Length: 550
Image (cartoon, rainbow, N blue to C red; front, side, top):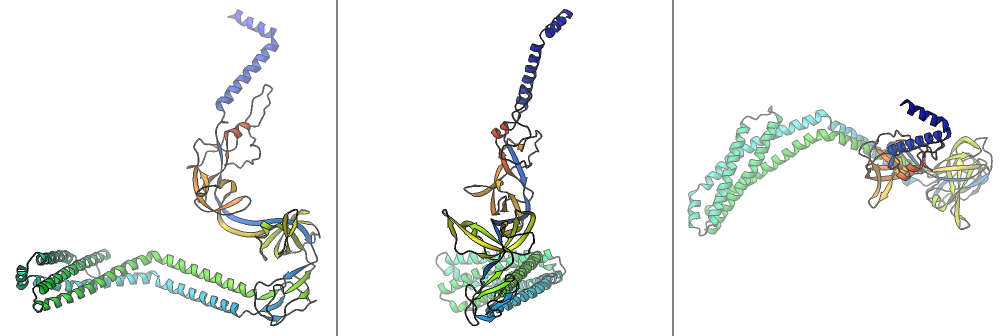
């Protein structure tokens, strides 16, 4: 063995360069085999994002320049007869100053009506709170049970007498004699049906009477409802028995031509039927009253919430009416000089009532034909400036071109946005960007736009049954061999980055925001090199992505 080791040592020292090369090759092969065994480059990875509640703002953006002295056409929002003019051409006016009034009788009436409706809704809510108090609801239910006891007692009295009366009628000898004289089996069938239904009613009555004997107003509510239901059923059965007996008597009287013989029985049975129908209606009404009274306890909160919602709707209607009324007074949108006045007392208000020149700053923004269709006068805007990165000013759309300009086949429209505040750092002709808010929703479910996909059934998101474990290999996303589920959703508003989800998922759910295919993973993994370098980075995301985590 010593000789063998000595031989190896002599060989190594005698061939140093070759030994180093063999060692490097062995290290390279070992590292390559290890990475092949442990590599996850062939697995699909998923980046997920939690569904959160937030505010989504939809806006139209455009760029332009700051201008100072400019004129704005003042356009009324309503039509009608001019009832007052408070300015003249050449007059200097301040922001918010009244320029003229338009006949507002109908708008004033709408405000009064909305106020009356609101007061009525508030009164109805207070009455509902009193009616739905536990004290009143309990009293109503107690009265319903008391009425049930009384109605059952009265009904039982008639049940006893009418069952006895039916028994007497069916036992009459002349009926039996006439049945024997009538040819065929029809009379016998009528009699059998009458007797069968009589015995059914009698048996039901006997069973009900056992429960009725021990019932009083202090009995448990369940026992009262039980005897009420049994009496209701017995009354229904007895009504059928009376009808069948009357049919039997009527048939015998008509077939034997002995109507006068049975006229007393027919009259008695008709009175029985009227009485039982009356009892049946009374019992039915009490059953419904008890059920409604019990339901009132669970429905009272919903009724009050509905009434409160009605008040909120009427408050909104009143505010809308007031806002509409305010439009009948035309005011100066900002300080300036009235250069043209087209309004005269008694005339119908024109489309442009005046032109005002202002020395205040404005933003003149250019929009394409698609975006300008979304813009309305009065909408809020946020203004930012390239020269002043830390400055943001709110503004309002004051004017929108009605005719666009065409250049190289592209149609553009200019809009003018007034500044809510003036800043001395803003200079004429500075570049300005405007984000005009066209819609906004608060406290809604939001997901990244990349999470929302579409198929023949509409929009959907992808979700796993359980959250994926976080990656531990330094690469983006989590590995899953299971394909995520497609969950159909109803999408709402969307902007450049987020989409509102109206239904289909809930807050806290994790949805797939990006899928990384095996080819993308492979391109981002480290490739071993004989010289210790690599053709990629284990922590580098695929081109064009931003790591977001799970």
